[in-house]
Image (cartoon, rainbow, N blue to C red; front, top):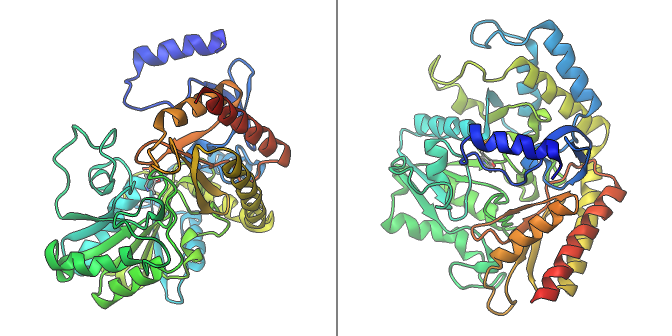
Length: 436
Ligand SMILES: Cc1ncc(COP(=O)(O)O)c(C=O)c1O
């Protein structure tokens, strides 16, 4: 660590509580594309993208220009007090992008968790039913309802009890560690059908307002369901008139090579939540839902002072323009193939990798002590992340056991940066191999 970083880190420890965690000790002075520069001038290749926020890259010139232009005119009016067209234009664009041939409406919030809260409020209001069904390994944020919906106890939930009522949890389609001990495809995706059984002795479908799911579980370990999964889940929801909320906070805005990851499964959710990469690094989240649902809620029932801030909306419009005009989505598909090739090659060479999964550039590898027992190699994942950081690569782990290494790099990363990052990652795996 540089002296400048060391001093800042000392101050950080003195003045800021430990709970808002830090993955690295880096203090950043500038960032462009897929590279950050710390206060000591050290370059870091970014495979984390601010936890999936920088899909179009750090400081994309069009995003910076949009922010500057908007800040020069006005910064805040509060949409509820005096409106601005960027809020409306962005809503219109997201309504058009959402899968499904029916009218949609969008409202904005400040964060992913707040969008989750609003989606749940909307679902309960519309259905006049209390229960919400969520999943093992889910992550939906840190506010009370979002935390309740989140699965992992440590560090997210322990000590913060009691949780919100009427939340029920079922297993997800975690094929590598199937809760039911079944194997795909012979299982016939029983985990989706299990919801019908769940209704018999946990909560009635008539009391259930919504099912909330991530298309690919992010913090939970990039758990990627098989193709039939969401089709079955949606069918059951439709049968009982239950709302399906798809949380695309981490998977959305091109992360998987499609604007919404749920497009890979070909279903049309009732409510979709976006955040993270939506506004190129500015805080913004969106709740996009069927118009017939959105229109029911009374005036003033939803909203917020900063929600849909003009600078964030301007930045988000620039992000959408970049995704389309610069063909970033096409780049993302190609990037995904390169990542998959590299991960699959690593899988062939390193026994510690038990599973490789994901869609497009949203890929992960699950580390295990051995492929037979599948015992999570949590310590190894920690060491790998630390080694990579020391060598100049910012990498994130995830998963209920903290043993999954994931890729969330900006989609505009160059081939050279990608290779350099993966070479560091492979060197780390080699080192782990030598020790075992
Ligand atoms: C799927 C998902 N939902 C919700 C959230 C919460 O978003 P935020 O941190 O913006 O509140 C996250 C954050 O990582 C997430 O990955």
